[in-house]
Each structure stands twice: as structure tokens, then as C-alpha cells.
Image 1 (cartoon, rainbow, N blue to C red):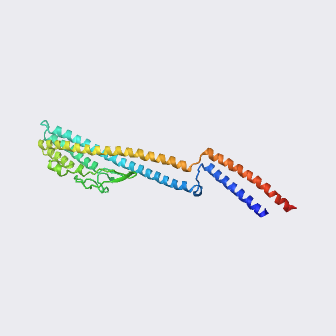
Image 2: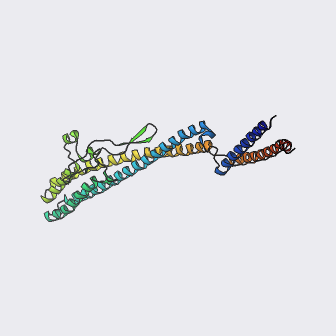
Image 3: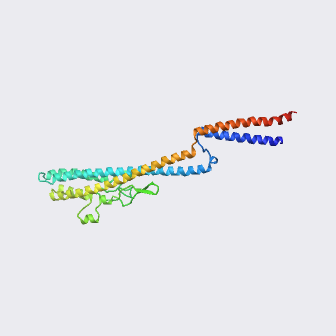
Length: 297
């Protein structure tokens, strides 16, 4: 065996031992099984897919939280409308009897005017600077000052799961406007109903007040129906939240299994490669000694 060949063998063995030891040291210090693509190309590819799934489910969680926030704001607005409609019914019932005169009804009409303003304000409730009852026209107020519906029938959809989309707004035209069947049955819309009560009070018309009381029951039922829709959607979103959270947790655990190193195994591997490096250096030293002695002779 020539001296040059002997040196090449020694150098190759030492470099290989150093490389493995350095790799094991990095794994022990980072506690990661994969620190670069060359460590495990298939593992890196699998990790990319898992990270994509985690990112998707985290985005679903954000969409769900946004949806729930918008729906909760809708529910609060609807509850406010119901409270105001109930107050209008109390006023109507109180003012429809013969114990109240025109002066009392005029006084009550002032409160009705304030409630009318508040109903319009509730109809123009916003979330994240968007009008929640306006459909796709969310940059436009849902109701004009005189109570005309200005929105559209757009359904805002957000993805809340794999191939799962959820409508996050209420298509609210039917809340603020009467449809063909309702008009045929003699019903009007919410704001016109309040104005009808207001007219009955200011004109001292008991018949007008009594008619408005019947319409108030109709509008209360409609508001309650819309509120029930919100509740059912929120219930479904709670289930989607649990699924997304569970998927994130499982994927994180899987990702940890792909990339993370077992501390006991990493420590054992490092000690083993360190011992191999030391023995390789000793053996190399012995292998090189005859050549050095020959050179000195």
C-alpha cells in the first residue's frame, strides 16, 4: 500500500467520522431529526404538506371567529329590535284604551319617534366597518333615514373547513321589507308599521293604534325567526371550530413526529459517533506511524 493511498484512506475515514459526529451533535442541540433537506427529503416533503394543512385549518379558525363575531353582532342587533318592538307594543296597548286622551298619546308619540330612530340605527349595525344587514353592499347603510332597505340579497360565504362553506350574514330584505305574500295578507314592513303607530298616536286614532298592535306581533315573530337562524348557524360554527382545532392539534403532533428528535436516541447517537471518531483518530494515528518512521529512516 502506497503512502498516498494510506493517507487518502485515513483522511476519508476521519472526515466521515467527523461529519457523522457533527450531524449527531446538531441533532442533539436542536432536538430536530431533520435540519436540512438532505437529512430526509421524503420527510421534508411530508412536512411541507402537513404545514399546509395546519395553515389551512388555522385560516379556517380565523374565518370562523370572524363569522361568529359578525353573527353575534347580528344577534345583538336583532335582540335590540325585539326589545324596542316590545316597548312599542306596551305603548300601543296602553294608549289604545279610553283612559288616555290625545295629550297622553302625543306624549307617547315622542318616545315612538325615538324608538323609530333606534330601529334604523340597529338596522345599520356594523361589524369591522361593514353593514351587517346589507348583503354584498356592505359598504352601504342597510336602511335609509326613512327606513327604506338599501341592501341586496347577497349571501356572504366563508370557508370554515375542507370543502365546507358557511353563510355568515343574514339576507335581511325580508326583515325590513314585506314580501308579496305578506302584502297580500295586509302586512307592511317594520318601519312603516312604526310610522303607522306614530300616526295613530298623533291623530288620536284608537283604530290606527290597534291595527299597529297587530302588526307589532307580526314583526316580533319575524325578528324572532331571524334570531333563531343566527342561533342555528352559530351552533354549526361551534362544531366547525372543534374540528379545525382538533385537526391543527393532530397535524402538529404528526409534524413533531416527522421533524423532532427523541432526546434519548439523539444523545445515544452522539455518544456513539463521538466514540467512533475517537477510535478512528487513534487507528489513523497507528496507521500513519510506519510511514512516518520510514520517512525518518
